Length: 195
Image 1 (cartoon, rainbow, N blue to C red):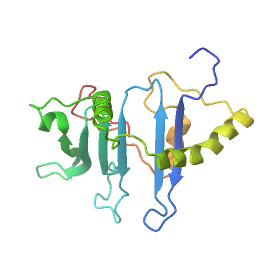
Image 2: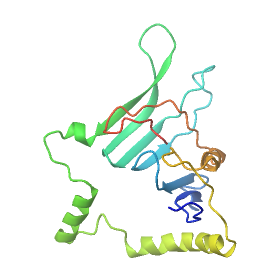
Image 3: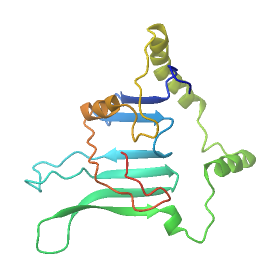
Image 4: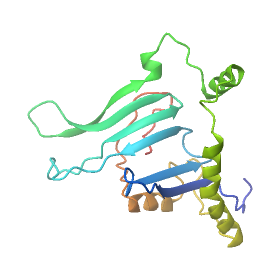
């Protein structure tokens, strides 16, 4: 991107599904270029339990994470009591990392999977027409408003964890809490889980 460009390269939005099952549950969608790591994941953050069993200690929230790529994995990030007599908690995970579980099998990367699906005539890893139409139904008004009101995107640092600071503020307003403490122990990047 050239200096002075106002081309949006990052988005953070809160969506809600209006049905009895998901009423009141915020869905936080984020996507961006030039971030600190390239990944695709679904992260479900569970609410704090009440009353808090860790009275005086503020612990990170438990999360279910489905990492699509790279380093495919499904793990539950949770707080556990450390072994011993002290009442001390630590973050740990219950994890199924595909590369660890299936060490003797060559796992295809994302593009290899898609190309194989094309050859096999499978559409399971592709967006359906109704999904694409729904995405455009949701995003077209946003894009039109950005263009008609000449809204300039907020800048963010190349290689940052999560885009502009306003992104963290928006997620916090939706109830998401980032603890800045968890280290993903597997995979090639071994960076902080950026939730």
